[in-house]
Length: 101
Image (cartoon, rainbow, N blue to C red):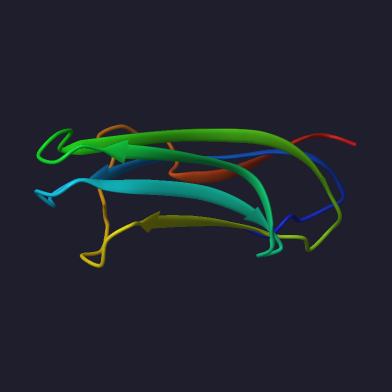
């Protein structure tokens, strides 16, 4: 997401991931600033055959200049990939909101 004007912003994500793998694995979700600086992250280790859906809700406030940007990354410790699930409500999955100057 690209910041339209200089100011302080709330940035966050609400993500549900499918844990369709039967083995244990760790999920990580992070929000980065300009693709480099990790501004917030969460990591959840899921034991084998548990938690068919894993939820993440991250939020932080960050001072930005116009045209700065944020990225949301989802990773796992295995090679089977990650399915990001559709949320059953109208909440955005990845968002920014200007708080002021």
